[in-house]
Amino acid sequence: MKAIVYSKNGHKKKEIVLNPEIYAARVNKRLLELVRNAYAANLRHGTASTKTRKEVRGGGKKPWKQKGTGRARHGSIRSPIWKGGGTVFGPHPRSYYVALPTTMRKQALISALSLRGQSKSVVVLEDVKLDQPKTREWSQVVKRLPLDGKRSLCVVKAFDENLKRASRNLTHRVHVCEARDVNARDVLQREKLIIEQDALPVLEARLLGHSKKVPAEKSAQDAES
Image 1 (tube, helix red, strand yellow):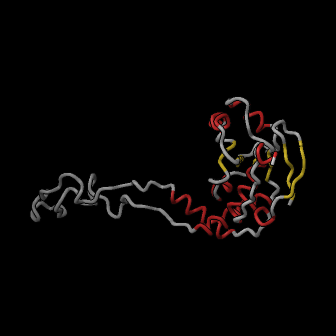
Image 2 (cartoon, helix red, strand yellow):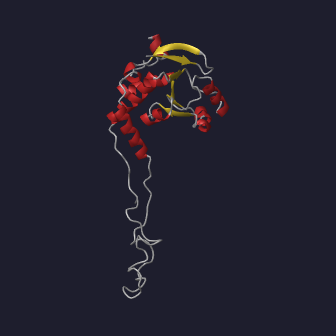
């Protein structure tokens, strides 16, 4: 699968081949559904709480005698059928956490990236470093890319302070995250995917376990010897 590399000015620089194991793999839609629901569940606080009849204040005295009044018999004004009474089967604080195995997370991310790759929604950006931490500068970079005004996810190798500050006000248009933190839910929530060129090997190493060893620079003493 091929993708065009764009500069920050929106110019086409070159064409590269993306790893088909990540961007052209078989899309497991069932897995994507399970993982997306799990991520959403893990974001829930689970703090909703209601009071049962024993927790509502008052209601200790029988409102009227059992017989002789002509009215229905009641034993407490905090019965669930009374206004202000307790709640039956109401929510109580609980954990909605769903454990996801690492392999499942990786396969879901590969399926999500492949889904974007097969729909030609992947844009590779040559460099994302900004000269100033200005939202206007980052906004201009985004406008020059072929995103068609759609919500996008930008995956970078690592945050620099300028980009971190400049992108905070544009998260509704372009959400920026590091390659080590991106997940399937992030990709599925946005229609377009921007990937920094330096982030491609990071994603490959994370998802496929490939680590490219970069040769260390020789010192002056080693060069002389």
